[in-house]
Length: 259
Length: 259
Image (cartoon, rainbow over all chains, first blue to last red; front, side):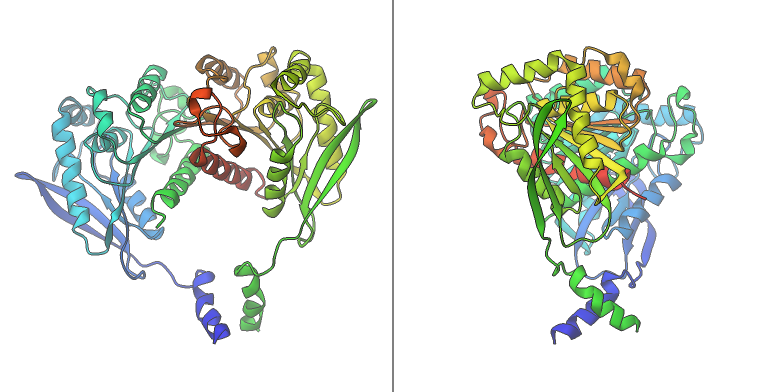
């Protein structure tokens, strides 16, 4: 009997059961605003599992974060790449991206409502274990998941990849209930040492459970291959920082999602 | 045939093959000085494997680092807890520990010779794949493994746990050939923010492949349960920082020891 059970397990152990990642573009709302997100999960898995929100860079919901959602689905999570800007609002260049990001960076209550709408949508998904939800964000999106944490959201953790760390209301860190992991390029010119120091002070003063990891030679957007390979421009892809930061996220999830 | 092979593998997959950790106190030399280290490896494993040097805190080679060597042996490495101070020199209190540590902190060439003697000893071990050697160090020992790196040692990586980061010769960072991982308590009063900044500058200027991870709420000696649980004393055990830093070390080893 024991041997039979083991034989039954063998294909799983050898990864012979392939992931069947299903993706879907979905509409949801924040107030009267229609948002359009991207859901990804593994259809070959049974039962409830942790959910992970993915928040886009200033360029808006696009292929990069959709790819991250699919990677997370392969890891066994229900991933939901949210839309902060609204359906159809997909900046085509840096000027448009900057204009959109600025709207939310200047109106943190609105930023919080938008990401909370994504969280509420994910929670309604029958496959999601609502006691095990995290949020990750890239660049602008890193700042968004920190704002979600500062709003007092009842989630397990947030992870930022080369994310903005500044906030107009550092005192709100006292609301943070979740664990925080910051993955930072040591040479990022857009998230300055002063911002890092201020963030550390904010977290320390509020006694948050936080971790910060710095990767040498990495600048802004280090996890995105589309950022090119010239760090002197301030944004560039770093294969090592990409790999290491993803591993750090997986370790963090293993901790916060442990039953 | 395939099924048979799988059945054969099942006990390994289920961890039914137990590690047989062998430990041995060994003598070796640095010049005319006799040193007494502690070797640990898994006798149930076959063939060459990576080697890891373990460098003690200022209190000298004792049960704590011996335990770490045994943990590393269980992970499949040949671990060698070195002796920087010399056979029989095992400080009994903080005064004696401080006096010993100061000798080496003031004489970095001597510190380098002592740790290099340990490295040379480990390299002679037939079980060690000499192309895959790392060194880890705790507190004082963290400073020692960084000095080993600055000496230009041909190893794969060094890891410091709440280690000293300062050096009288930051320009020697240009000699560093290995990867560097620093695991730091965010509230460590003995390794100050100024020292962390100076270290980052040293590494950056020399274009070293480095990473630094900060753990919230952690002070000096966060990985050692014997440090007590009162962070206000400046040294205390942090179960979360201990667990997270050990995981970060394992990830680092997976990277630097990959064939």
